[in-house]
Length: 201
Image (cartoon, rainbow, N blue to C red; front, top):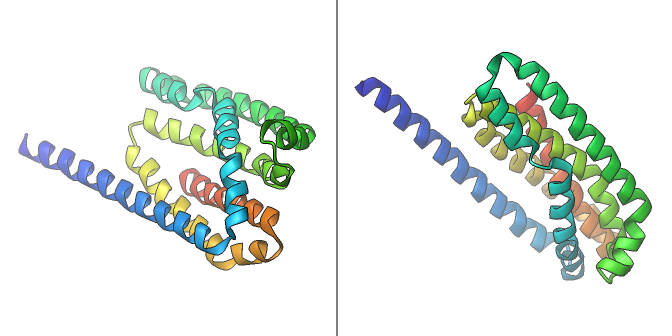
């Protein structure tokens, strides 16, 4: 009984520790972004944030929660569940990517009232399918009660994002504010690539 309690406590502390490290790295990435790209580029990036959150939510439509719940209830059907989820996620991502491709200038001009955001909005077309993929895989792990992997993946995500910011964001920033904002979006996408690779392998 005591051994079981110790194992549970160790698992809890491990998850909390990993989550804390992930949050600290995320804060460091934000600070590095603010310091590297100009204030005008940061303003553009801030403007597209609400749209980014909306599109990410639309692309996921509660899939991670649904997957984790269904896999926990029906572990024998887990393969069918995540194959179906991936198909739905891919179709939604493609639809949203097409909307971004055709409507980015309209979003920028009429919704955000700033045509300088157009390039960064196009960048969301790269980010959306990556966030959808990583969230679906996270849902699978949570359903299988392997939460530690999802917490560790956040650390990997921030490490990849920081690597991009350290070695590449300066190039984007030198090209102007619009490119600087696009670089910030690509940095997030790069982090999602790292997270997805970690979760997959």
